Image 1: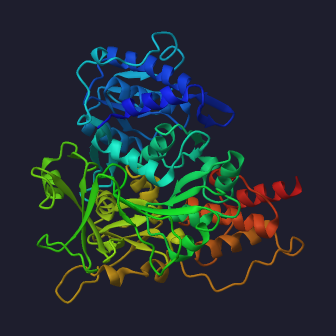
Image 2 (image 1 turned 120 degrees about the vertical axis):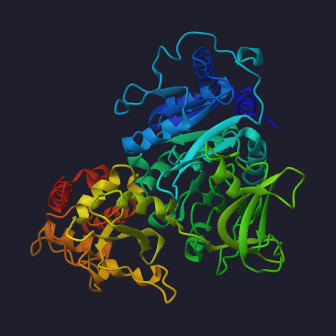
Image 3 (image 1 turned 45 degrees about the vertical axis):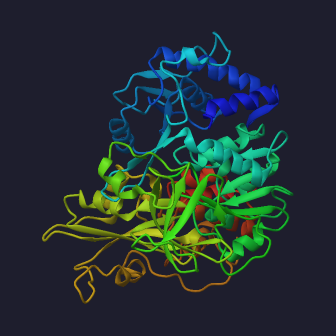
Length: 589
């Protein structure tokens, strides 16, 4: 087994001055990238970073982010990704829980106030100095594949996110799997789409930089699903990309990745998406939670679209067991729980031995001492060995590709003094329109508004976990045996005043002489969000919109009005009146 720094330095030796990163108008070669990372790594070692030491990294999308991650790994440390856009309280929890020895940030990240020694990444930090590869005797201690590589926090059922600790042990097999399936190499261009806070980011990073390809980076605005993402991929000649189904569904596939590959991951790839994205390119469908090194199985290339899209077979060095409640192997197509084993299994949850023991259990099918991760996912294995995902066994859900514990949302809402009990559910009839609904019961004599609770949720939850609707209930429905009946709550958002289904309409008739842009836009928003009438004073995101639906609305504006509205304008508009003004100005330009 090798570490990431071993594999990267081997790639540099083969690649030399070949482009490693393309970001906007900047291109960084492999040799330059390696030298910068080596100089910064020596600064980190001098600051006390060594094997099993965590370094918090808070850097926006840029070549500097790649330099920082490589430097941490070269020094022998592990990185803790911090998204500067996350709520401060959530970032503080992560840092307090993980106890990193250092915070590495750029000068433009000024919002973090964490009780951690800092190193600001500027020209001085990785400017002058020895740019040769880090020798083993320079590190504070010997580095091996068993040492920590990263800690990524995921949603937690108890109300606080939990850190998944992953070592280097699965990286060699991850890279071997990528080489076998994708044959990516010099001249290929890999899109870096996933957020740094998710393990899919590491897949993009390794698919490019451990194979000699170019990692194509872009700003968050330029990666928004829909026309922005499409234009970015065309502009930079991307031929390898990993995207969740929600992004695939919002983006026109025509002319993208010709002869290249697209990998769907993070949620269920539907038959219609597979049919569209398998034309003119190779389509793979991948599966795997954060508790393994990015993934566990992969299927494809998809050649014949069936009713269900397979998640394939385990990748090199891994195993996926389909087991019943007594851990008996189900090999005949019966549905069971998916247990993940092999080199990529994480160490466990950081500082949570009890939870680790419950989810990372002894593997009766592996060598002595081996473990497997109890995923909570349901699935089956067909006689030919192909695996299929069939759902969840608990209250963990996927919303627009994000893995969410509904319990964390409920716990946050219940921390509000005017909430006696909260229950979160997911509504929506397709991946792109799914949204979270919070059902709350108020204590006697107290009232609280929907917006107050949504704002309270934002105090600790990232935006993708903030409920789009809040419904006040007098009592929660129960089943005959007295348990909470979540199914009975389904649809209450549309049955209550939180929003009523929009009437069926044909496409909006665009007649600027008869209708104002405000009227037209309000009708479009009503249809896009599938709610009743809205007013120019409403905010799109306050009505329950999210980034994918914003991309969908932008596409509708472009199609019906012939106007391209930048995604930044969609997010910046205080209300629909302001957005309508932006549309009118763009149409007159």
